[in-house]
Image 1 (cartoon, helix red, strand yellow):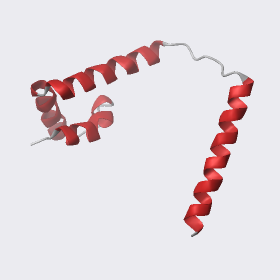
Image 2 (cartoon, rainbow, N blue to C red):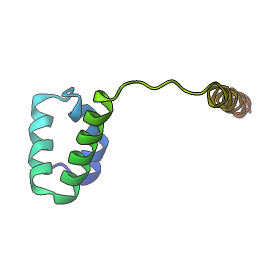
Image 3 (cartoon, rainbow, N blue to C red):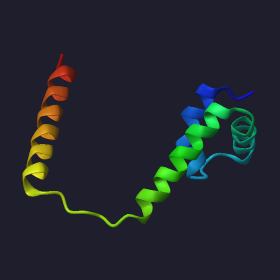
Length: 84
């Protein structure tokens, strides 16, 4: 029996149709009978469809640089934590 937690954990794979047929059947049964999971599934699916249809937009150079700086900083911090 699939729980809501199970469904949410498998949602990405389910949307990508990458689950096994048996698991997919269980997930479909759950989402059919669980209004909360249906809302999450439906909203996520619609959001993906909207973004797939959108044209890529360029990132302003200043924001691009700030993002790269933040990523570099985060990677350095992570590296220091892993050394200890």
